[in-house]
Length: 66
Image (cartoon, rainbow, N blue to C red):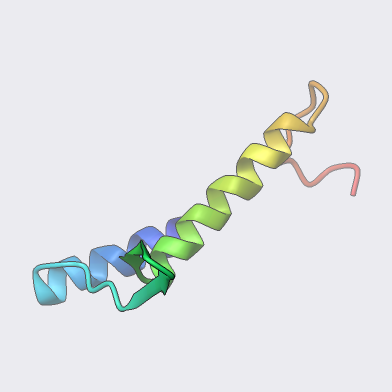
């Protein structure tokens, strides 16, 4: 999540905007444009939510018990 946020921040500082360069079409549907930093943020949030939902009352981000 942090890596994606930093990537978008670097774009914002250097270029004044975030550059979205991945653009997909499926038949008539146009998926909103995005970049790798957006993907890393999305995947990171999904992993964090999964870990939180399966933690069973434990700290899902602790390294003990591995």
